[in-house]
Amino acid sequence: MAGRALSIDDARRRAGPCDDAEFDAAFEVASDAGLLQIVDGAIDFRHALVRDAYYADLAQLQTDSAATLAAARDLGENGEPELAGEAAPASADRR
Image (cartoon, rainbow, N blue to C red; front, top):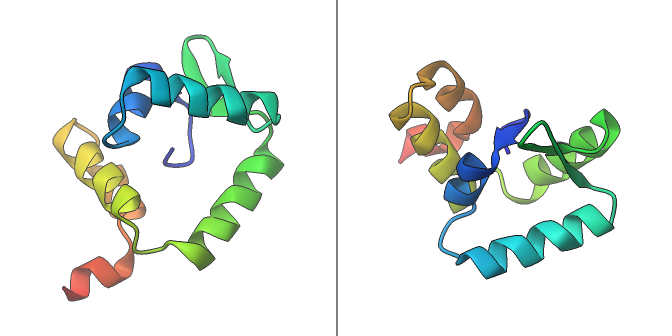
């Protein structure tokens, strides 16, 4: 999610190859677990501590994941290049 609220369309695009039903089901699970919410038409973490814990684990488990690279690519291609560098893992530069 790149550390900030995303429009539902942006979140769907960054989720990668899944259909609407899969995306909706995954969001429902995350929402029911108290992790994500929709506020003013955007998906966001329910609390900053949840976001921080997610990103702490993500950094340890998947700093070089395809989803992170896709988010960076999406940010760069859709008018937010200043955020793209934050989303891309440093190891991607070494490829």
